[in-house]
Length: 277
Image (tube, rainbow, N blue to C red; front, top):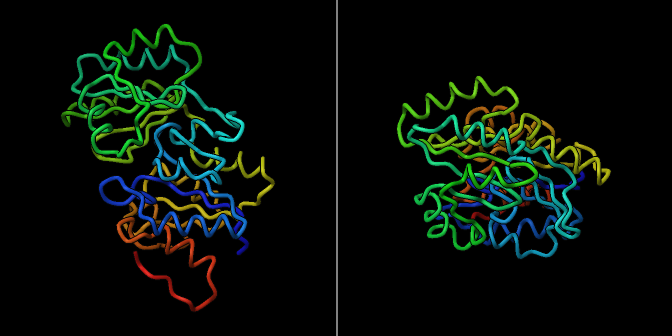
């Protein structure tokens, strides 16, 4: 296939153990770029929070963040697509969580805002500076009431199983929002028209790239929409069953540089094997 664009998920895909990006993955993505492909991080993280090693690469121009709520051109600083939750809806939903055993984080204007101490300090202690721009705002709902624009994503962490069940029941009353469970301990909530697939389609139309020329690599439910759009959908070896069923190929796990394996398999000469990291 002609490889014109590589859309790659971050956590569980490009990122391996201890929240680090293996050098082998960075090298392979650079080879794709040198071969003429556009390399696009497609992440559930906010724009300011995807891994620093990729943030520092000048040849990465476009970023899909917050599960597709934003598609940003880093060169111009402009969003090519937004699918935001209106602030008043975000506040209304968060207020309905009052009394539940949950921790709350919000993505707004490309920054992660944590209401609770535990997720805030976890990001700062274990993510190697990726979330240096994140902030903790204890009275988050009140703060949001004074803000303009929209919210990219709500992230609800469950302290108890009951909280998980009650949050899912609450979602039934908010049809304008969608819920993605990329991890058993939390859900990610976005506007109904936000998805990595919709953002990827918008970018390809902007660049004049056909779906057949696109490779998308992912591991979780929030990656399904972009895998369905891409002509070459690749699932990680550690991917969820639904992702593997959607993909045309399953690569190695994230701990074995599966991204590098997939990209180099597409780029290399037939029969030449790629080394593990």
